[in-house]
Image (cartoon, rainbow, N blue to C red; front, side, top):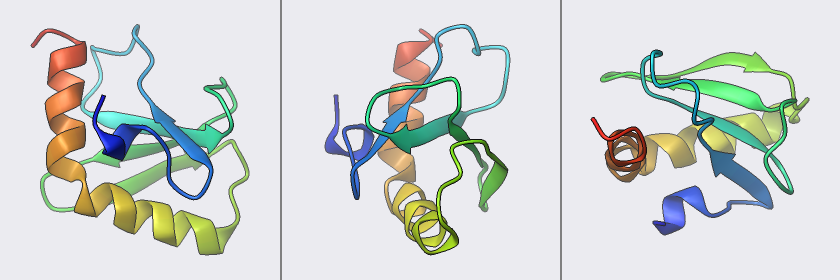
Length: 85
């Protein structure tokens, strides 16, 4: 697993295995994966916050969004590897 998906600021980055019908996105929460996670869509030209169910503070959301953007290539690679696409 690339470092991009391990952790950042204590947040966990992950995919749910039953969401391969959706476009690439990543879930984020503190600690371990949880259904109350925050979701970001990963698009060609931007990283879009879908929802903040993990109630991540705004200052951290900005940092996380930038982190995802900087590691987008690795995250997308892992998305397609995870879903065998």
